[in-house]
Amino acid sequence: MIKKIAKPKVNLCLHVTGKRDDGYHLLESLVVFPDGGDEIIVRQGKDLSLSVSGPFSDDIGDISDNLVLKAARLLQQHTGCRQGAEIELVKNLPVASGIGGGSADAAAALLLLAKLWKCSLGPEELQDIGLSLGADVPACLIEKPLIMAGIGEDISEIDPFPGFYILLINSKTKVSTPEVFKNLNIPVDRPNIEPFDLTTTGPLFSLLNSCRNDLQPAAIKIAPDISKVLCVLEAQSGCKLARMSGSGATCFGLFELKVTADTAASKIAQEYPDWWVKVMPV
Image (tube, rainbow, N blue to C red; front, side, top):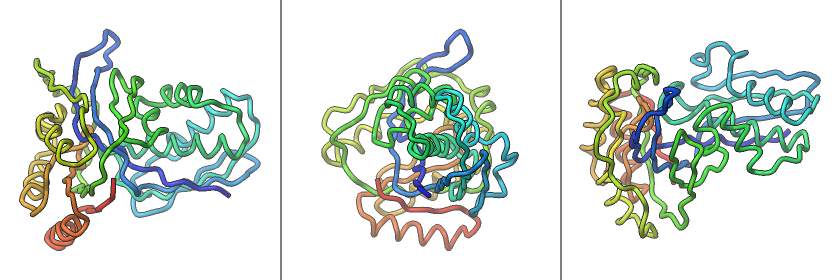
């Protein structure tokens, strides 16, 4: 048995830079992967199987169509491997929430199964397999601070990168990504998110405050609750930035200190007990 935490993908900023002829939008995003998330466990098995547990397991839907199984089947097809596996997904992250849960699960499954089945695959091959599953999967295979561009295939790691704490909040409101893009107005101007000196949090927070999430207005139009979550985050002492991640509806607040992030989380969880509230280190 081997296991791995599938870290969430948080878009600290996200700019829409254009649209391809095939309908895919071109993006530029600074992404981090906080410590925490879903858990993937794999064991040798005769066939491929997937079981799901955890606080958000009921929201998964049809297991046979899950990205984890799709990743396993694609890896078999790519390598010619005929081994099976018993896969367990512990779903700790909200579903369809803009933090790449499904993509992170698929990436973790690829890494674990490649190890379990002793597949001789280089990083580039895994990236290619990941991209065929979804635009966010290649970044989730890396799980390091990076800038994503294109449709997700153009990746530049950021090193060094400062540590801080992120407070994630989801009001349990689901937002359809296709609906968000349908309501999107592509901005004419595009802020520059090329990092210059990111050894400390000061320059990073300053850079992020000059950026935005271009999907946020469209998501708020569909799910007005997002505005409420952002206002609650912005009101917390020590919050350096509040923004929505991805296509929503999860929002985040950035904090330099764990104590201030934990204090804000406790306060919000008491006031809004139905919300999902989680502090994670970056």
